[in-house]
Image 1 (cartoon, rainbow, N blue to C red):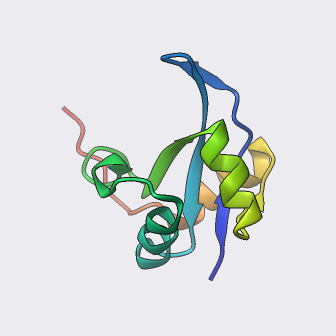
Image 2: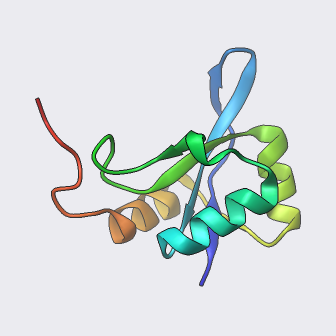
Length: 92
């Protein structure tokens, strides 16, 4: 199992943010708990099609120290496509 992070480039509420994804949801939740990220921060179906957490640049640095794999934009998109839940996002 692996956990992935992209670059922290999105600015919001005074922080830079990135995505935390994993090969499976259990691993994603376990790793997020290790980081101290609240489960309520989880984003997955039906809100979005790929299970992930948005984390700050500070959390990203710690995630990398704990073993998360740093990904380029292209690589994280490939992971996103691989882990997404078919028909997981409800469209209005």
